[in-house]
Image 1 (cartoon, helix red, strand yellow):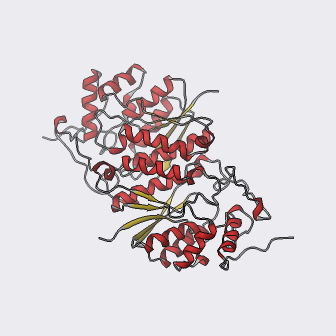
Image 2: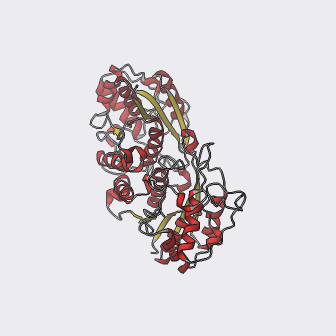
Image 3: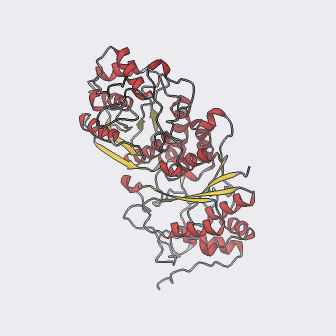
Length: 232
Length: 232
């Protein structure tokens, strides 16, 4: 039987690269995306394009409304911080764009689907290098989630197959991630990173855009992203 | 400052008793219920009545659609098993009414809200006695979730307040739960247990009804539940 893997997909560089890596290991891919009160639907559209491009077996999009609890720039009506240059990136603080419990909720849904599919793996594109200060991107969080997941499910009780949370990007820099995906044939023009895009163009100034720009530079690969020109 | 507690509320005996216990300890209660593709909305109505009766500060109802992943009697279109007598209750198998990852998903949302409220506790009415064989009701699951939760959140990173998952019913039998709630003034006529009710009447034959009937008998307290008469 083909190995199955549930892959969390945001339509960004990291999750798309993680998906390509899962596929390159012979997994049948089940991709999972979330509408969680983002201010833009562009990333869902990118996730759909990525799913088609990578030939996934199924792609599910789940609606979750984190706005009910309020409290973050990505879901509430407060401004995303902008910078002029990459060296202004915050590195040690938890940013305002942090969404409480987001990865925990995403992984919980993935766990439900993995159990039904009898998929022994969930792929998530978190990285502890160049990461944006989110507590739920740290390796110790992922490890604790995996332990919990194997106690939460039938699978865990019967010990037929233990569920593994795969984080193939965990020790890669953005540049290394892009290089890896590029070598696997990923078309990054299908992906988006921007927290605040206008139509199909990225702002080029939010934390996520700055990481992307820096990443392509480090990888030595041309950045296919259309950016909004910066006003003087 | 008043202590805050997020309480998972299904409108049933267990979560209602857990809520009464949280309140009796001086907590300000934030109750959280889920519409998850149940075949009946009765339990949401009961959760609302319970929230009013116990004077909660806020009650949120979250829509989650586990039907997208299929696979359980409570969310899909397959029959709930019925029994004639309490001694036919399954005790060692995982029942068909098990919903994959349900408690994990519920607790993940509770964790998001707790973080925003800076609430140091989440109450969940799971019990390891008289429990229905669900893996995600076991103490070891709860402990693992708590560990994960404190790594997932800002709170956990800054160590301001650690989040505790409170399970005040974990070692109580159904009879003891009912006795405890009764002593705290809980009106169990507001609650429902049935997996398959018709209007406001319970079937009296599903696992959950049988546990309820047995519980009131053990507690020596009259059962206020309207049951559908069993056909000869």
